[in-house]
Length: 82
Image 1: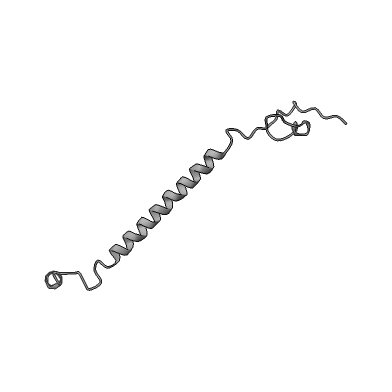
Image 2: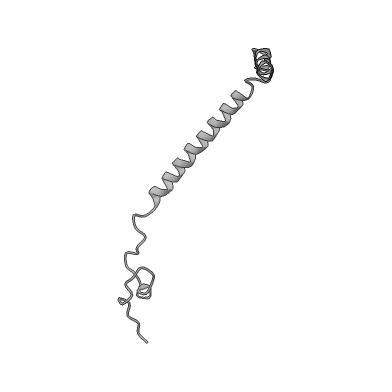
């Protein structure tokens, strides 16, 4: 009984499931995806330009005497005078 009702429901289903709204979202979705890709490309180009402007190292060329005890120095290397 259940099988025959299921078979009837499958066979009675419309053969063309495309309604009046079918396919209308596709062009809008494509435009949105393309705009997102263009934005992504522009962001990557901007990031690469900014990274190229950075110096190779952030270490100062000639450190000042008061910078001897900054982070990144050896613990016993800094001498303090009182």
